[in-house]
Length: 161
Image (cartoon, rainbow, N blue to C red; front, side, top):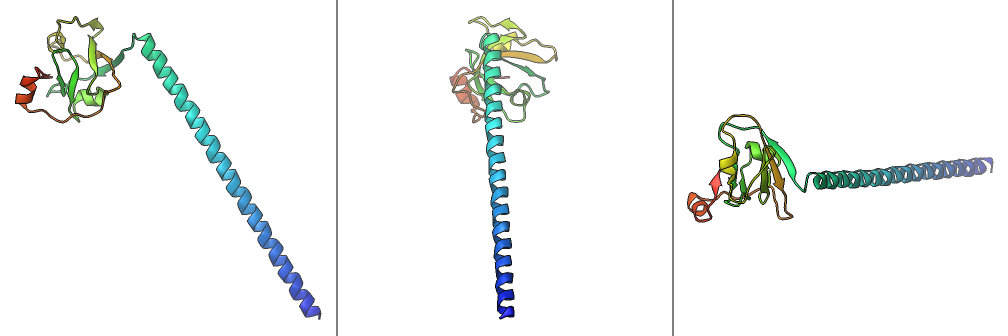
């Protein structure tokens, strides 16, 4: 009979230990979930703060985004319409590395506002200093563009820079 009682006591101890381990694992899982939720909440708040700061800076700059383009030997890597809208951005070129997007409207060059009759090509200084463009970004601006053939570019009065 003592062996039976000892066996029951061992089983109870094992059950208690297993229950304790299960409670401990559940507590660890709950703590991990709470930490993940807190992290996600903080990241969301940080993203909203970044967005608000970007919107404030955009409003302060007259709605323009300013990008500095270090010039390359093979040009800026953009196609531009006569209305100074970016029609192409070539991957790996200076404009792409600077954040210029297809659909951006060039409003200023090195701080000087473009007139409606100005073309970007006519306003780019011939020296090799970095170029600062003031861009008006539309909701349709996007990162990439398919390359156009020379015939299509001529038909739409675009030019490459």
